[in-house]
Image 1 (cartoon, rainbow, N blue to C red):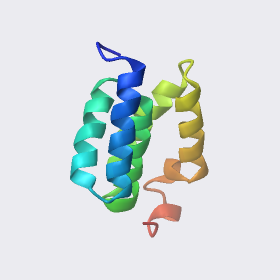
Image 2: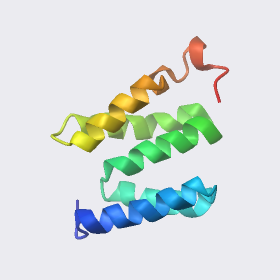
Image 3: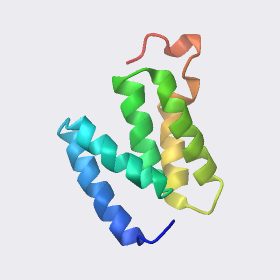
Image 4: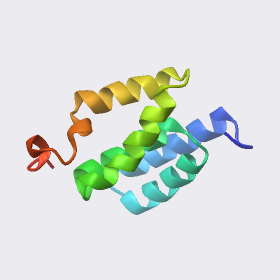
Length: 102
């Protein structure tokens, strides 16, 4: 992570999450992409979620790969979110089982 503290990133994430919940996707996505640039794993998860449920599911894959990479480091939050993504079968994107999901 660069100059911003974890607390700063968490505050930005909370605002982005609130925008996302209110279906203000474009504003949320802009904030989430800036957080992803800061290598903030929760942003990877929410970006993957957006693309999985609202766009082409295959566009979620790059965000899932970043989340998986973050989960290999000692980051409990990234591990939990990665587990959650697998639990929701996002890892099956593009397989015949997920062609009709979303």
